[in-house]
Length: 156
Image (tube, rainbow, N blue to C red; front, side, top):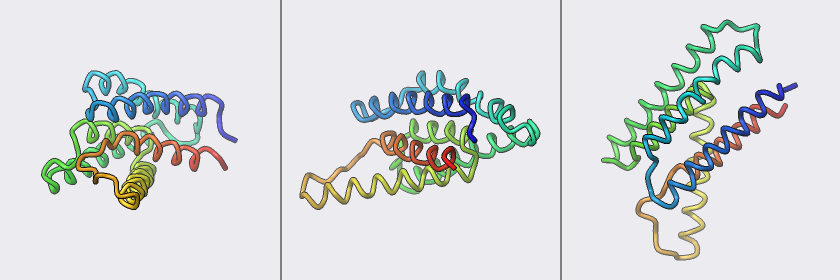
């Protein structure tokens, strides 16, 4: 049984992500001020997880969150460097923050789902012979990837 507090936390997290997605879709950027405002919210996650699952130590949840943060940051930074800026700095920072919530394994599942949704969308665009997208905002796909990952984690 999932805690109502945890369900509420994840639902509110999706509201934050919806805001990032809409702004990124319109402006093709994610503002640092918004990411900085999202940071304290993300830092609540290890504490909330500890109180939801008290059998695991606070150190476990802290290390899990720190590892997720580093994995998200390093992975997307490496992709950005390898693709000569194919991933924006806002996306890199947002994924790093999501790593705090999901840990490494959850973040990798979220990224895989997000990339899959982006590929499906681009495939549909190409099938209907619309102008090919050169730069796509990634935050909307992160929103859908996170929503699906949260459902997988929260629903037994």
